[in-house]
Image (cartoon, rainbow, N blue to C red):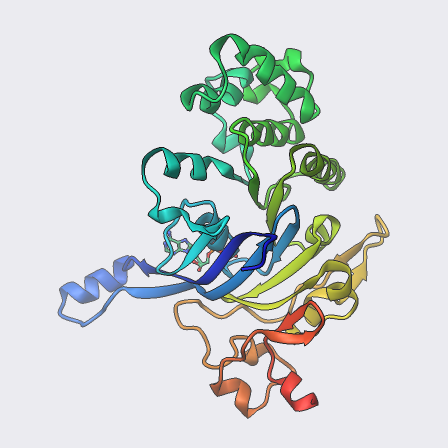
Length: 334
Ligand SMILES: Nc1ncnc2c1ncn2[C@@H]1O[C@H](COP(=O)(O)OP(=O)(O)OP(=O)(O)O)[C@@H](O)[C@H]1O
């Protein structure tokens, strides 16, 4: 691990057992041999996240982004592999050390409304975790919360209001203030602006940029929207059906995508309304993670697939300085 790595994802996989549906349960009762299917949500991911960077994680719905983010945040346990934070496997820590490490990585979810307790005032929502963990003294709590609200662009006097009295963008800011309240060093942002209008998205993304400076934060920024990820990330990791298929500096990756999947993602089309570029939705369905294709997972949708792609998993390897890609075409070219 290099000195500036804050978080190392080391050979991490996650499999879920999918419950049988009604038809399957009935068939089983009648004697059919039906075992619960296994969902291969994340498949042997290796990724180093550098201290202070924003690493964007992009891919289509269902490719395993959230599951990877949840494992990084300690909310889901890997089936295989380890996640090292500052060189330590947090899952092996005990007592106060485990608690302190867990607080350092916070997750910000997509839908703040469903994660904000409607019966609590915003100042209570933001102050709840630091009070519980004894991070701030009782007599300093009010000014601590007011300061946080101010930092995320909310009028501190709004602390007495309830979540439903805020707009979507303001609720996103409350969710961010709540995460910051335990003084994290690392934020996992999972589709954190997806529910917002485009103009509000830009404001909240700019807030993330500002907070990164103000609080010395590192982000894993998860989104299905390459436009969002491009806006904020230093580097981008592209995920397809549980695997990282390409990783590189944002501008370079978007200007010169190597992997055919990334190439398809970045083939942009301008919209007439805004003139802003949007990214192409790839044709064809993402295959089921219950029955992933052999070899390169992308081969059934890849216009360049050849025999080797159907049988051999391509390794993620350096194809240019700072650029990793998992595609057999790179071996053909050299
Ligand atoms: N707790 C679970 N039990 C069973 N399957 C799960 C569970 N969590 C996720 N999955 C499955 O794992 C796969 C990856 O899901 P995940 O939510 O990580 O993908 P995603 O890329 O974040 O997509 P989305 O943006 O739609 O959430 C999906 O097929 C999903 O149905």
